Amino acid sequence: MTEYTTRVLNTVRTKNAHEPEFLQAVQEVVSTIEPVLTAHKKYEENCILERITEPERTIMFRVPWTDDEGHIHINRGYRVEFNSAIGPYKGGLRFHPSVNLGILKFLGFEQVFKNSLTTLAMGGGKGGSDFDPKGKSDAEVMRFCQSFMTELQRHIGADTDVPAGDIGVGGREIGYLFGQYKRLRNEFTGVLTGKALNWGGSLIRPEATGYGCVYFAQNMLATRGDDVSGKVCTVSGSGNVAQYLVEKLNQLGAKVVTMSDSNGTVYDPDGINAEKLAWVMELKNVRRGRIKEYVAQFPGSQYLEDQRPWDIPCDCAFPCATQNEINGKDAETLIKNGCKLVAEGANMPTDLDGINIYLQSKILYGPAKAANAGGVAVSGLEMAQNSQRLNWTREEVDAKLHGIMKNIHENAYHHAHEYSSDCTADFTNYVAGANIAGFVKVADAMIDQGLV
Ligand code: NDP
Ligand code: 2IT
Image (cartoon, rainbow, N blue to C red; front, side, top):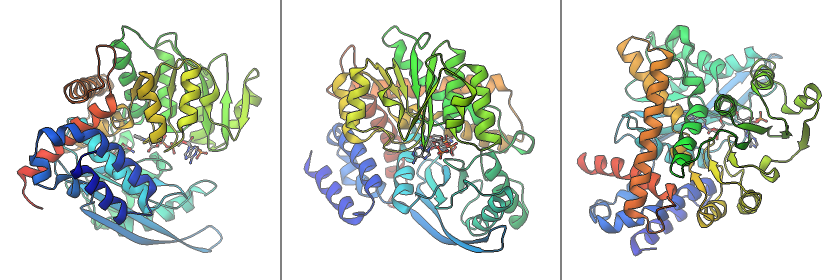
């Protein structure tokens, strides 16, 4: 580590001592962008690292709501407006009991670099609440969303800050949030993305994160003359990202043998084919049930209570649930069992030990900022369509998503080979490549715009 990065990391650690996920995300970025900081002193001279690790604005607010029995509940709401150097703040809202400021700061920080990689004009932000939508009625979720938006609306706007979904926030929640924004502000604008098709949404937005992650995996495999067809794949999660990732893998001839939720994993050695996936989608999206119900429906499959999918042998692994779901031991197990590719649908699903093991093993590793950027990229395309007051076809949006993922891969590949000394003809350090490519665009914009 250089004197500059050591000093900045120490300050960030002191100032954010109780935010381990945020510190983890910062450490990963700072340790990989050193070569570009050394090559170009302007970043240090302009204190870019010190500035880019501090959110421009952090909003925290009370969210009171009443349940169906009339009992009052108080949750905490947040919006971290991290960086607006290259566009309005953009990033999802997460509703999950584990949400706290440190988790949203890690997500907002990651979003800055991810959004930069998409090539679209979007800054980075993230928000959410410790509200748990599980087990709540639609009416309770609506009242919560209305209360949450009653405060959030004064901070966001189509040219200021454009939230979207994340864990616990899907089409239902975006609908209630949009309705309340429209009522309070008396304007129909593209203030949220992930809207339904009949009121401003974009085709392919629900599919975009999962599809985009598979497109990124295909681009990585192509560098080794390989393809996803015929590959045995393990997937974690069974929500939005996991569902469409499994759909695309099936379409491309891969075999997906696991899906999971926070209670356990289903292992289906015959493969979760299109028909079984349709059943999972109905289970999770309509009945809002648990993944363990799969085994009663599909004999031959097993339910692994309290387990993640990483002990199951696979060619390719796609973590699509949550942060730090793969540790060093899991990464070792994956590689010992023959895994040749990890592409991250979730944000920061692998801890720092796990990442080091992937890099030492020289497998194809697509880090979240690059591999899951398809979701926010199509959010950017939804914003573009809203501004034009036009809707593009499914084929048009999918073609643009394909192009964006290819571009992200090339950009990360070239920056890795230019700056990261561990790259060879057969190996690309996409972590360094994605972090450097994402950083340079934002940092240069910050320098252009002066000390703000
Ligand atoms: P969903 O809420 O639709 O699904 C989340 C899935 O992950 C569920 O199966 C859930 O299980 C599981 N999960 C959530 N928290 C945990 C946990 N603590 N431990 C184990 N499993 C857990 O969310 P998404 O599919 O949208 O998001 C999944 C991941 O992808 C997140 O990391 C998110 O940040 C990331 N992401 C999402 C994008 C999007 O466009 N939606 C874009 C880019 C990244 P359970 O039902 O038990 O809670
Ligand atoms: O982590 C992410 O990129 C998202 N949850 C999607 C953000 C967005 O604005 O579409």
